[in-house]
Image (cartoon, rainbow, N blue to C red; front, side):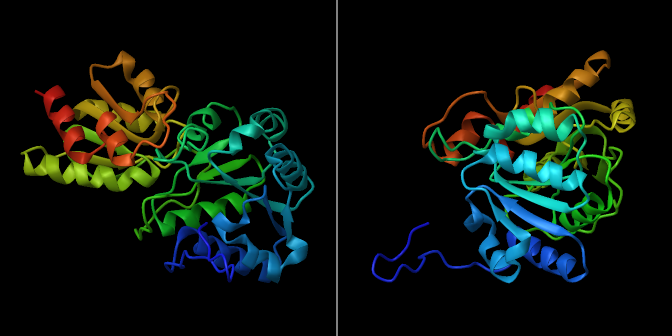
Length: 319
């Protein structure tokens, strides 16, 4: 991050409470309760604030250097041996560990937890695009991949993930501002979509950090005389098939919104399942392409990810 050349002090000030600070407070609490928790990362402690945790619990912190592959294999082995490792990764670097996710973590069903940050359609350069991890991780068997939308859901998922010992859990950290919203789910072993607003004709499934976009789309649709259903899917790679089948009964258009590449992603999984039903499906997300320092606003226009453009597409399809 930018820093003062003379003093070495960071020019980036702490903006206060965040998902990273919530994570640190949560880990501190669990360690104090006696949980055998270990934090693992690959040379990026700063983006999670892990230096604070490392200073307080040096024997509970492991920085593997730029060796993402090692963190997954090592963390999975620790989980298999009874520890509760939480492995921290940036979305744009975690693809280096694809083979280890597949052959070590997933095949062996090792109950490690992986936190993925920066999984967004971003304006960074082409070597630092975080929009692909959600697609490829969601297509590996034996992994539970979850996208919380609020502080409450984040904590609830962490509680469940640490209590269970059956499977690896990957958590997509929300990136569009800290949200506070009541949650009802405490068990995430089986996919269970949450309907947050009941409507008809049009249903919006807004995943993870872009749930707030779904709220805006629902509001604009209501202003245009459409009473949409709004859904918080939470589960990235496990479809709630019964929920989707019920939606088809009184909805003609189902729109999905995700903060990543569409090909092989959440929306296409929904569309594939609904292909045998008489319903139209719209998927909003990114194209499968490299972008080099393209402003996010420009990308959102290109991908029709602004609430206004999504509403226009939905209204056009629902005529």
